[in-house]
Image 1 (spheres, rainbow, N blue to C red):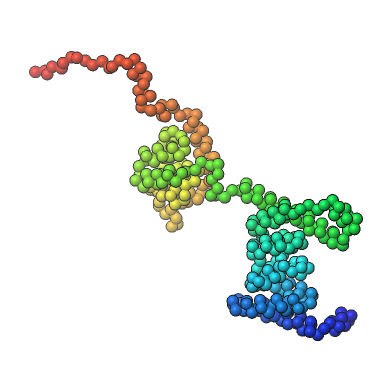
Image 2 (cartoon, one colour):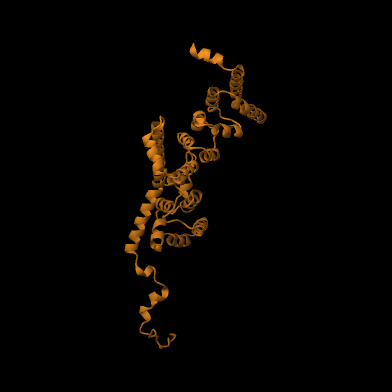
Length: 338
C-alpha cells in the first residue's frame, strides 16, 4: 500500500511519460522485422522519452530491449553509454552490440562497463585484445588512495572485488583457450613442416598427367630431399598407399593429390558407392601420422643411401681413369676369310 501511495505522489506528467516509453518499447518489440523507416521513427521517439522518464522505467525499458535482435545503432550506443545501473543487462546480453561498439564503450566509459562487457558470452578475439590492452594501460592507484579505501571501505567494495576476481578468471580462461588453439593447430598450418613449393606441386601434377614416372620420381625425391631410390620405391607400391601418404605429408592439395593418384593407379578411380577409391584412401589418412611415417622413411634412406646415387658421372668414372692410360686397342687387321 505504501508503494501505491508513493506512486500517487509522483507528478502525473512523469507517469504518463513512463507509460508512453514502455508502450513504445512494447510496440517495437512486436515488430518481427522492423523496416528502416520504423527503426528511424523508434530512434526519434525513444531518446527523448527515455530522458524524460523515471529511473525505474528506464531500467525496465533497457531490460526489455536487451532481448531485441534489431535496434537502431544510435539507440544501441545511447543505451550502452548510460550509467551502469541501467546499462548493465544491455551490455551483458544484447545481441545488437557489435565489436566496434563494445570497444568504444569500454574505452569511453568506466571499469564497471568493462566488467559488464566481460560477462558476455562468446567475446571475439578483437574485443578480448582491446579489453586486455585497456587493463594494461590502466594507471595504478597511488598508495595514498589505497590507504583511504582501506580506512573507509565503501558498501560496494565486496562487489568490486568479486568483479575483479571474475575479470582475472576470464582473462585466464581466454589465455588457456589461446594455448589450446596453439596445441591443436589447424590443417592449413604448415609452420615447421616439410611442404611442397608451388613449383614442385605444379611439376608433380604435370608429370602425373603425362604419366612420366621418371621425372615424377625426380621431383618427388627433390621435394623429400632424399635419394631417387626412395621415390621410386614409393611409386612401386601399386596400392597407392605410400604415394598418398607422402603427398599428404607434404601438404598437397586434395584435388591435385587425387588426380596424381588416379593417373598412376587407375584402379583408384573406380567408384565405390559413387565415390572413387582414391578419395576413400585419402580421407582415411591422418596428416600427422603421414608426416611421422615419411620422416621415418627419410631417416632410413639417409642411413642406407649409397654415395654413388648422389655422385656425378664424372666422379664415377674418375677411379678408372686415374692412371691416365688409354685402353689398349688391337692393331691386328681382321682378314676376310675366303
